[in-house]
Length: 493
Image 1 (cartoon, rainbow, N blue to C red):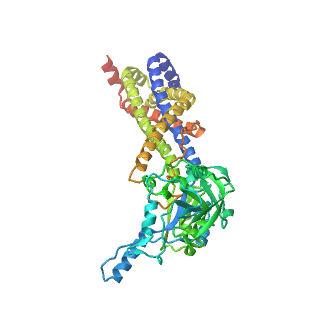
Image 2 (image 1 turned 90 degrees about the vertical axis):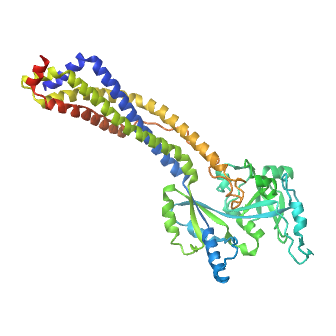
Image 3 (image 1 turned 45 degrees about the vertical axis):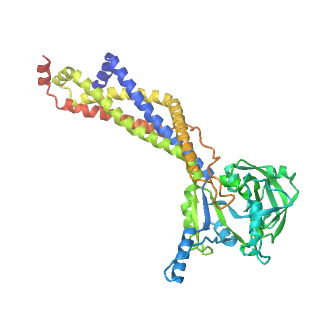
């Protein structure tokens, strides 16, 4: 074991070279261990976010298939000349929607039935350029003058959002709408005439929880009296079109049980909803739910479709995944660069110590022990570096990881803002209240990673560190194995 003693004496005699190797190896180990700890923290944060947020799957009419079917039907009936296609909404049967809610991985669900209505006995919040009065007078007359036999349609001034549960409604989940007094609408309110109104609308009409209001269908044929169960406050700024149409004004949105919205719509809407949203217990189970749902015969899958919506989860973990990918690349780059740099240093060291090796070989020392000596020297440096890295990498990883996450969050926010600003009219034209707002508008981003140096990360770093040590020694050691002691000593003389 003389080669071990020689290695220690050599390190002591060449302190400058040893310190340089220690410095380089420590940097390599700190960066590698930091990369692994950041990856572990990112994976844990992603897992927690996935479990907490889950994902949403929406059951609604397949408009593309519907339009294609209309096109084929019109082409065949008109002798090959396609007629103008028209949008027709096909409601979802409540019983069919509830069948899907009984499947595995469904943590909860909500039903939506949206329509418009007229305020009766109270005033909606007026929009700056509302044309409802002029529209009302014009719609009362037909092309040939006054026609008392035609239904007189009046432009609605309220947006009615029929729901099963207000707490899980889109805008409430996103934080855009918030209950400030009274109680939320729940599944127990189905069949009851209760309503939640916006705070501004309540203040303008001196309304409070417990009061009653009346709303009418657009043709004024149906009137419903509602008891105010709750008052909510919205931060939704609405769309540009809200300036021209009062029912698009966010303050004029009222929440009711979906059965009330169906009453306003008419008898054809009984026991139906526009769509249903299912909340998954884990976003990873969306595919399993979709496969199971396709086997439910109560739903006509030629008419309806499932849309997976995990935008909230994706927005939250997007920056985390980017940080994890970056740290993974750092591990690769640092490992390769560290092996090359240390290999170069060992190679330079071997070249400087040719005479020493020539003498040792001349007195009968085995070549394998010379390689072992160099390996011991680099392993001692590696062990010291491992210890320093174990102590310091936590702080390095915490600072670097959080800084990277902050940058990624800023990039994601800018990208989301750009996306939300595309197209005129904002969310105008969406399926109605509950769907028009962005799911991700108020999503709380993860601003810090919980960095913890685990034994698993230490073992990974140690394995890579030892691998770097072997590579940095074995490749230059090929020169030692090819050396002839007589040639070395002759050249040295």
